[in-house]
Length: 152
Image 1 (cartoon, rainbow, N blue to C red):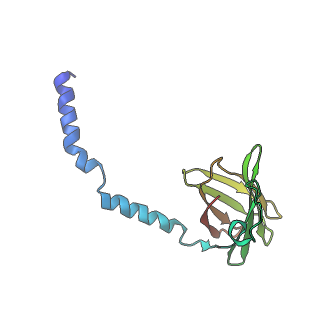
Image 2 (cartoon, rainbow, N blue to C red):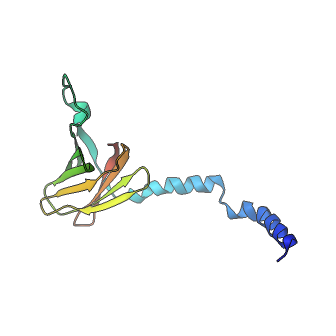
Image 3 (tube, helix red, strand yellow):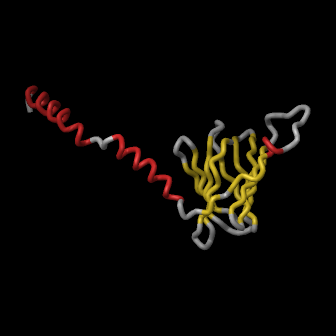
């Protein structure tokens, strides 16, 4: 192919571009339909956040752990956001105690999957920076409980 062929291919690519990229309304509809992926999941609510609900201390250290409680249906998920020298982590327990699968999703698109033990206990490593996370709990019967996105 010569120089003229390259120019012709570039011109052809530019002419076809409107048909190779989806219209903005199609992209928006696809984004909106993505929210339907969890339509069958039980939605949990945040019922306690130590950062907001506890009495303010005279001097509050930033290294104190944060405790959150979520309730959805018959399930309660209690978590502690903790910082250690080796990094940040989410320690939690599912009540009533049971073995479940958990999936943590971060704003930057990362996902981490872990299994809780028979007592419902789990530990998940968190990103080094504060950001919004979402947590999905998959029960043994295949149903899901979706915890609301929370900044930790």
